[in-house]
Image (cartoon, rainbow, N blue to C red; front, side, top):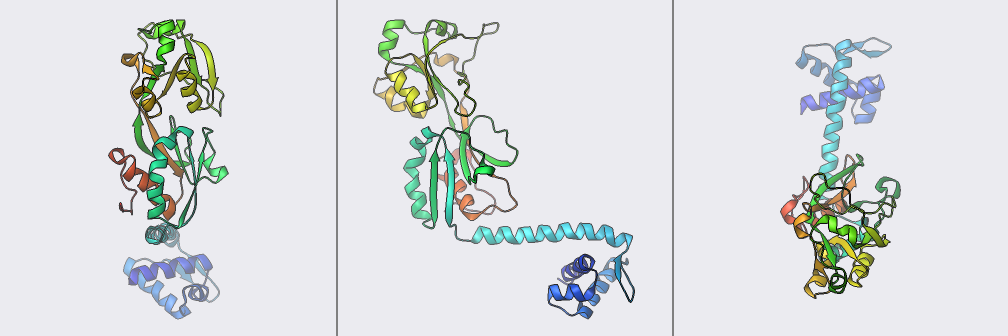
Length: 307
């Protein structure tokens, strides 16, 4: 503790240029600050400050030591702030951006989160638009696909499988495709990304030297629920996540095609802006998702425990 006090005294003196100014900040007398710095120099065996009747300045060794001490004290402040936030009661408005289809797995567990953390106000935006979390003040987002924004922290969440489906009535009229190339003779129901306007690529593994598919798009939209509705209505073959079509498959409204040619599963990710301190409300929400929805692929964030 004496050495830590000496570090504080030395850094403040170097920053402010006098023992008296450092003492005012630290709540000590100028003589106490001078004594702490002298003891530190004695412990290190090197002079850190050149004193004169008019000024105090860093020696070359003191300048190098000051840079390292500043980082050490910053890290200590960081650790103390993180600990304070970890034990604080989560509260306040939590802005969350999620894809529209995620309500299938998110909404069933929301009541439990609200009951567990009554002082957190969940504000969820169900929107397929990719938001700028920093600019728009979004605390947490759930997304799939590539994550190019280096300003964000992320955690891989639950897997999902994209499936090619069609209504039985459509397949009766047009036949069941037996290979990806056969899709060129079918109508496609396509999802269009809201941000880029590009059509979603279908996750098909094509044989080598297989030419690129040239499907006729009968219907496209920027809402995956509408893709499912159009596919159930018999407009063509659609591509959707497994959790979205599970009930339609069970009820016989849809059936899958080309299962042997579908790529590996994709994953959802939870994202939050990178910062030195993670707020309690964000920390508990991310951990809650890991615990309740995606326990097999998530771990608790450092400094927390599952409730």
